[in-house]
Image (cartoon, rainbow, N blue to C red; front, side):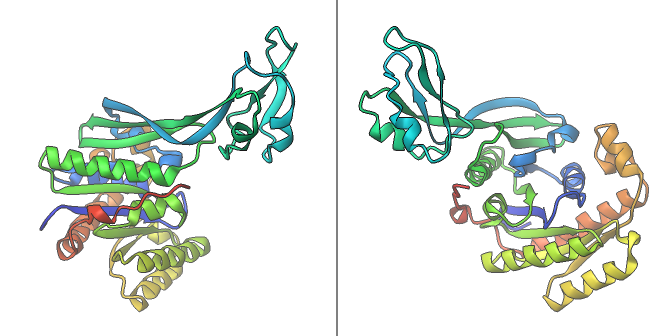
Length: 314
């Protein structure tokens, strides 16, 4: 590969087998840094079994907190809160038997209560939304994260992970970054794709798979990221598989592989191994061929654009 390349494996919907394929690619790749950009439902660690070597808090936005000792229970904050995030069930403080408190999950961080509190009883603190990690695995470095329950700003967290992966790649002189993207077309997907060398669409041969494939193709086109397609469980519906390949051809998207349905994939997951580690069956052979064809497309693509990374709030 020429320059540091970044491959983002995505799908228009969940459950297409994207993460299983990324895990196998991590096994097959040479000197790769792997990134789990599916931060809302990260599961790549279940197969790669990482050993965490670096752990950092992820902060984004702010949350209100009422100081019980200063609250006079005037109720102004509850009156102004548009998100029903303030409750009158906080501890007493000697001046009043009960005070108000903020439900941090319901709080949207708008700051209205903080601005209008006459007693200066409300703090507006940076919100810790989760943690991100750099880990070692049997397939090399893994950069991944865990969002807290109901936490937002997943797009911003994805950008943090990709920037960290670039740093790890530079430090360890690795020339390839492999990203497991989020399903769909929302903020974390946009943050995963922007500035990448190549997108690999993993599609299943169903009506919903076809619909969501067209949506994600539209997104990559708008972002200027070239894409290639592979159909997973292709033999479950040969007619839809052919339709998908025709749609890809009409849009100038190379079809780089078909993966058959294979129970060995489930058995590999149960054993916490990648498909190519656990099996030499039809799916494993198809994934190996898919990796070879994807590498050829990567060789023709531009290096990843670090400056192209976007930081999204949602």
